[in-house]
Length: 204
Image (tube, rainbow, N blue to C red; front, side, top):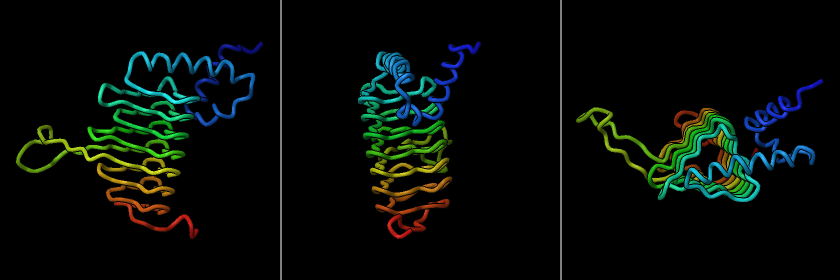
């Protein structure tokens, strides 16, 4: 006989690492999965300064940290996968996914992400930066924060990096492993280190 409890535990792990599957669950799984999410999200709400929209999915293995003045806001139907790291201030719009191992830190000025954007595994988005002038050790350098704004319907590829002060336009694509150090226009496809425009989604 199959161990139903072990099967359900494995199903939860599968959802944690591939949370898009949560939104396609059949009715027989949806009931226990929703109850599980109520428990997971309830613990988060009790411990951190967060605001959650309707029908979100949050993997219990995700690390989400918000405090007064550095709130984390998730819009409706956001999905946060296992081992993702989010430190406010962060505001995610509706239907935003943050996949496994992505790292998002809002610094002091904040990170804002538009509706429907996809952030792939291993992406690193940091809305702050350290100085590195030669007059002092790295550990004593000042930290600045200008904030990051990512538009709607954007795809941030796996292991891409986005540096402080950058704005990424609506519908843009950031290729796998790219490092974005300057603003990206609407619809642009960028790749490389540092990232450069290599195309336009409307002409491919």
